[in-house]
Length: 283
Ligand code: GUN
Image (tube, rainbow, N blue to C red; front, side, top):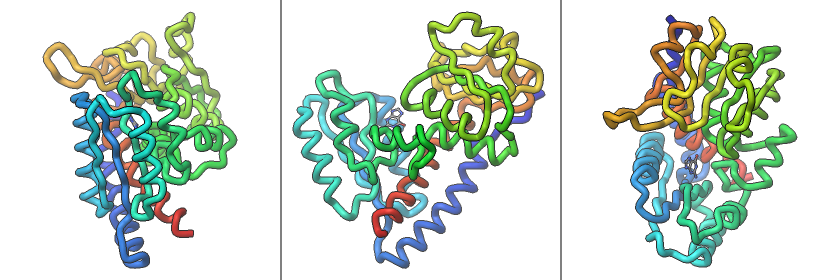
């Protein structure tokens, strides 16, 4: 049976350190680092994520500003708010919860955020920096996965790594980070041919496709390390990952569960990026 990679435990350890860093920042600066989260409309999943982010900020002592707009807000009004937050010195990090309503251009919004406050690392300047390995922030999910691999002493160098999914938020930056650690990286997606054979060669597989139990036991080499980024709802309403956990955990050496694997790490990395941003801005 595979060892469980416990994101709750790793997350709690890292958050203890973040709370100490926040406290030191407060002592030095007379105020806590601040994170502004903007949510547009009333998507229920977004509401849950935003609530969890707010709670996590309070737990480590980061000041959290939650800004809610109706789905009818114009792009112009949203950009105006971002300009205001860019100027506000008490706000060190800005996050606009995605997805946005269709009438708002997501790139225009992301591009408007000051790259120094872009704690999601979605701005083209930060994306470019990651490409060349000269970055201050990493996108939260891939950063959280690297922290998990490090905590469990999983070396990447020389390993065959397969990333399934090529989103800007997870798949693409994940592939770059594994490459930076000298992994041999293959990115698979919906048009990939022979995915079964490709996965069977992998020492490390990161699955971020958003399809219930996509990765099956017969796609996994014995002893492989499996990272499941999926958050899907099963027919019974329970959370299900992109990995068929029961079968795959009989073959793999290590595996992340859903929930309790990658999920808790994502918010932890957001907190860490906020502290990093606050420190950078006082320089
Ligand atoms: N929606 C789903 N994941 C994310 C994320 O990491 N950041 C933002 N801003 N929106 C999201």
